[in-house]
Amino acid sequence: MGWIDLVSQTKKNGLMKSKRFEDKMKEIIKYKSLLLLLTPGILYYIVFHYIPMYGISIAFIDYKQVAGQGMLESILNSEWVGFENIINFAKSPMFFKVVRNTFLLSFYSILWEFPAPIILAICLNELRNYKYKRIVQTISYLPHFISVVSLVGIMIMILSPSTGYINVVLVKLGFEPIYFMAKSELFRTLYISSGIWTGIGWGAIIYIAAISGIDSTLYEAAVIDGATRIQRIFHITLPMIKPTIIILFILRTGGILSVGTEKVLLMYSPITYETADVIGTYLYRRGLVYMDFSYATAIGLFNSLINLAFLITANYIAKKYSDISLW
Amino acid sequence: MNIDKSLSSRLLDVFVHGFIVIVLIATLLPVVHVISVSLSGSSEIMAGNVSIFPRSFSLSAYRLLVNDKLIPGSFLNSIVITIIGTIINMILTISVAYPLSKKKLPYRNFFMGLIIVTMFFGGGLIPSFLLVTSLGMYNSYWALILPGAISTYNMIIMRTFFGYVPDDIEEAARIDGAGMMQTLFRIILPLSMAAIATISLFYAVGHWNSWFSAMIYLYDVDKFPLQLVIRELIMQNETARLMAMAGDFDRANEMSGQKISVDGLKYSALVLSIIPMLIIYPFVQKYFVKGVMVGSLKG
Image (cartoon, rainbow over all chains, first blue to last red; front, side, top):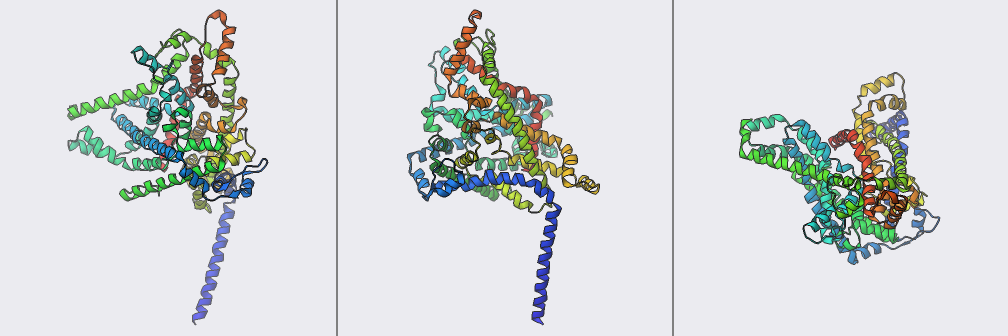
């Protein structure tokens, strides 16, 4: 009696399995035109995102580019060197310098640039004239649309030691002109200030949206209880937008090492390498200027992994101390 | 509201209005200044007399830049790249966002996972560069358009929008015998025009402002987009070129007595790079704000 049950059970399982398979195939056929539509896009991701991921293996080989050969061929034809490139990078004198610069730039960036939009959003919320508020908002996110090139261009011209307005004023006041863009110690300040200039208005948009979603009865109750405007800000507004702040903070921290390489590239020069050279720019020089492909890929791998580590950590901490996290 | 005449409330007002005024001035001042300088005579520029308003108004620098083929050529290049790039962006983005907006799509989670992973991890600069060049795209606009063809962030916004279209409408279309592709073109897309406009603008601005890909992949100066040319002129200090331009103009315009300084040229070039965005901005900014808000709702 036992094994007959077993057999019929297995038959049922088998039938169920093949029925599930049948159903699955029916679904696929039903959605076939959509799946077909999806194909070029998926192909795009595979070619331009996943093949380069495989290309990370270049960090572990002595990549030799042979004329006429594709990247994949050259990878297969090159010698395996294991962790040699990564170790060389870690041991090199540049390692400490660029990592330090990257962290410091990121850290101070986040420190100064992150709160600014929040403050602006809260200030805008306190405005009673709606028209004025709209105008200020619109003007404030104009800088977001100015390209990095134009931004750095403006900085260079205004800070120019000869004709830049800042120095013209300094000279008229009797001081010596300062070549701002050539001073290592000023690099971070300039980078971050221009970052605030660019991002404060645009960043405020999300916070303004979040604030407008706060239930107004909370405020009414607080007014009845005698709370001042300042108290209302700190006890209602800020706590209610905490989830937004945390999520944006996680995303910001996760990108900690992708300190805007493009912007640094435009702002720096050999004179300011001491503070300005970050992982991304060093990678760019070693890889695309000196063509040291394997070494540069190793640097890139290091960069990606640390970014990932920070993202995971930030998410973990957020999960632990609040209900909000990315996953 | 009478409680609000308290000291703390007034102090708050001082802070709030002060902060906002500072933000307004700081935002506008650099732009206004740069525009003013670009419109001033070169002797005034060198003497440093220009602050907010132009002095000895002069368009000579602009005339020079516009007549030389470098900047107008790069302007056109940027337009071409932006238009073609955005079209390809939108076709691919919609082709991915629409199917993925259907909750019953087979393997949907697998595809979403595949795509989202790319937001957090990637090959890096060198593997991408080697791949693109080995695909034969060096010195071609395709290198500027294909690698970034789909922005996952934009695609997710698009997908969210498609998800808002009520199922009943699609049901009705299906009952009327429309296939999935017909439904897409005849019904979904017309209903999603706002989203399409917004995402297209996101992509377009991205193309217009980009310079790095152009720098690493383009070799012919004739193909350079506007931002790259600006970089060459201002950051790479193509002084020789600028002086040649200034010299040419001097010889041609000796009579008008207007001399052009190299710095004057740089200011004017800078303004030319900003002007298109300044002009379009008031018209399109509301689309961007809406787009960000939808994106953040999903996030």
